[in-house]
Amino acid sequence: MISKETVDTVKKFRDDRDWRQFHNPKDLAISLSLEASELLEIFQWSADDLECYGKMDKIREELADVLCYSILLADRCDLDMDEIIREKMKKNAEKYPVSSAYGSKEKYTELKTKE
Image (cartoon, rainbow, N blue to C red; front, side):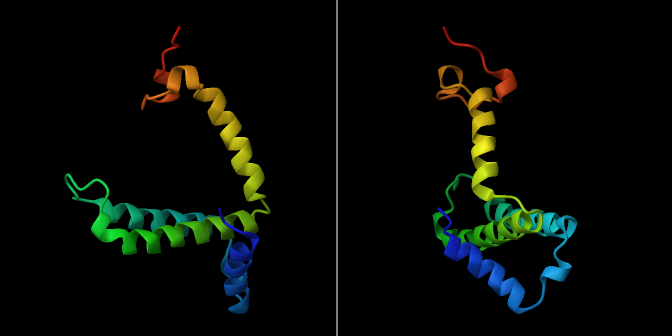
């Protein structure tokens, strides 16, 4: 769970440097995607090491970057993170009912109704 204190720390870091002026939605979305790609790169060529336990420090650092840019994008777009996540989870629950999605990795369009 991300606390209000953590969110405020991310925003204060930005504001102390007067960087909000550069944080338009397009550039924040690009930065978010780039950081997510850096996170993905940690797993590249990992073969059977699907968990990458020896790379947890790098995973933590890149995931923190992804989360920070997510916070900044939500702030710039004046979106309540709790609200948008709750809304998305409600939609996901409709797409992926437990009765047909339980234990399945199929996309919602491929799920079969279990009787």
